[in-house]
Image (cartoon, rainbow, N blue to C red):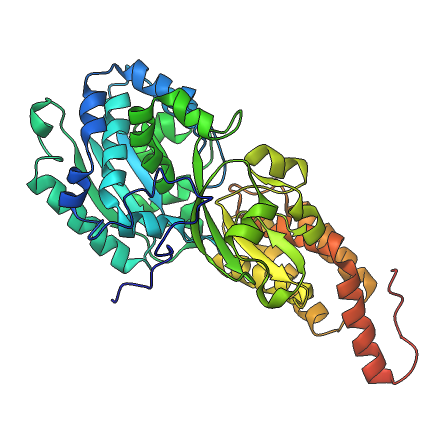
Length: 445
């Protein structure tokens, strides 16, 4: 399979802060020789001289929060792994990047896979784990091949395997391919898939830190989260924290997609202003149009209106304050020509297709919503149907084993609330065209 076109600009934007991506524009950046020439794997050697508590405390001090979407504090998550467990401990990397609008993990693997390996090794040191898997989205076949080559080169150079570089630390690592299921981006469904079972979510507790892969204590984080770990050890936790804002340290890869003049993946400090991101880095809205809607972190996030988005910052807490989520950093920009009813339908088609079908509220709710939104998109329906879409979505919230039901409901609720007039206009237009006279429906009810 051919390698896809690059998502990084040939030259970084001056407003970017290059930490995770600092090596990615070097020639042959994915090779182990390039990585070693830039000081690669030295943070792992540094970490071998630190205690487990010291490593975890540095990660805690860094205020690194999970980059997969949930934003849970990473150091705290690692500290939940029981020290005295008689079972082996494992490291699992979530590279099942399937959130629409998100394309950052593929960039990290494509351009600098050894930084991921080094982050995994340091995580292994922190909890005494000696085995790991990198679970990669099945459609990323080329990325799996590139990661496999990097792993093989690391073994050949003595950075994986037994007694790594004479440190006495052993670690075995391999990739595991997903099979095209969005559901397997949820950590417990991923573990089920890793074990060779159907990718359904688990009932929790217990959580993966206690009973993860093969019912053993497991650190499970996103690709970008592990990528940050070598920089934290090199810089120190406080220096990493200072790059960001209180409660959320460091940089974040942001994927600019949609109606933007300069789409791509950019590394920005947490707390970066949306206005500056769109105008300076993204080059403004395509065609000089106005922004109608803004998705900050992938299609599962509540949609913001253009007015709401312009004055907010790209960080976890700021997004919560305006009723959305930073999520995975998959920004989708929509201009003033966008049909928001059709957007709601397209999003629901995706989630209905990707539902694993285990939970009734998700399995049936996404199907009903897709049917209702199809009718409304075609201009067939009443104001009561619009209300029903919102009520049905709200009744899905918090009633499923995993967040997929919420992921389908949240953008739908926000679109209905903020763009109800577009739903009503479609119904009104259809009624006029059919009757050639006054509307036949009461749009209020």
